[in-house]
Image 1 (cartoon, rainbow, N blue to C red):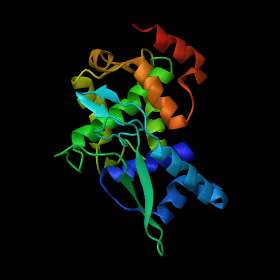
Image 2 (image 1 turned 90 degrees about the horizontal axis):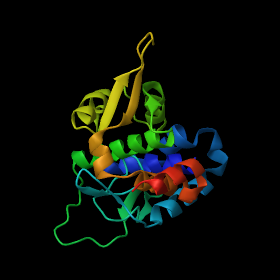
Image 3 (image 1 turned 60 degrees about the horizontal axis):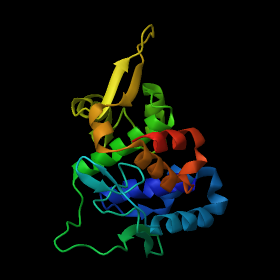
Image 4 (image 1 turned 135 degrees about the horizontal axis):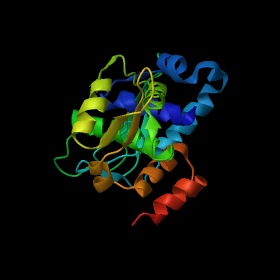
Length: 227
């Protein structure tokens, strides 16, 4: 629940939308409302952490997730969860990292899209370098990014993933033979392999989960073996 809340908060913050306690309870916490305070506190501590980012599309991005949590900063997180309305329990995320002179306060949609791409690439890698389309869509739904609905940041999610990311050579999507209805296989495209690495993607996942990269034995060995 903590990692889901972290990604939920980062998604909301991408458009600088204040986050309501009621939304957190309804969309993330659910049946765990009795430990709401503990989950929120742990998520807040996770967001305060600072680590290395990853390059993708010429931008240094923040891990999380989510397309979502990507910031054009060379650190991971460095954010403080602040309750700005104690009566209605409304929160915002505030950066605790120093800004360079002239740095934009708002991140562009392209950065957000690259964040979503990072999430998908990490999921593919953790699934053994190949994932079925159904598994990818279900994973995104858990992050409150629904392929069948228009997203406030990403627009048509299915079109973005199936067409734009493929056209840009970040993803390679191919039909799986003898499937009816047809299923598709997602793999890294050649641009993804050039712009990032399996080691960086594993570090991304580790930052989200609050674990060491070596926790995932096979992925860790594969990432470390990559030149």
